[in-house]
Amino acid sequence: MSAMQIDSPPDQAVLVMTRILEAPRELVWVALTTPEHVVEWYGGDGFTNPVCQMDVRPGGLWHHVMRSPDGHEFAIESVFVEVVEPERLVWKGAHDVAARGGPPNAITEVTLQTVPGGTRWTLVSRFESVAERDRAAAMGFAHLITQGVERMLASVRRLQQKQ
Image (cartoon, rainbow, N blue to C red; front, side, top):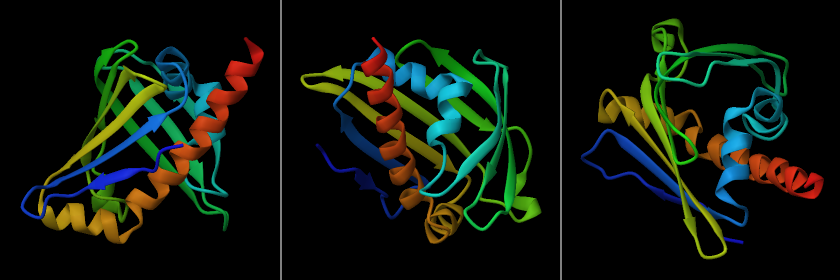
């Protein structure tokens, strides 16, 4: 099993995370874009997702409520910018959640590439500034994404068993 690779160039407002998932790209896509599966893995360990509605098409909305282990709920509203099944999904915040005390705004892109042994999953989050990227890092952004990807992989394995 590969470990998450994290790159954050000091002079760029970007965070890049890459991991090889031992699963077929098509199943990773299903886990990434189907609400019934997203609720199983989104967020870090102990997080739950009581609401997940996704209209996976350019301009479509993603309404999500994530509940932390201590019971706090975070409403997330995103808009899909680009959808290329099963290889690329791009979204951005529909509202300025940073202005309401939430995480910094970013445009997030996930690409899935078939490689020997599975799928290369790459997430690129582009923030408005290096300071915003650093604020996201201080909030545990990469740690929560890493945990979420582990949970997503478990969801994909359950999908594989059903085949």
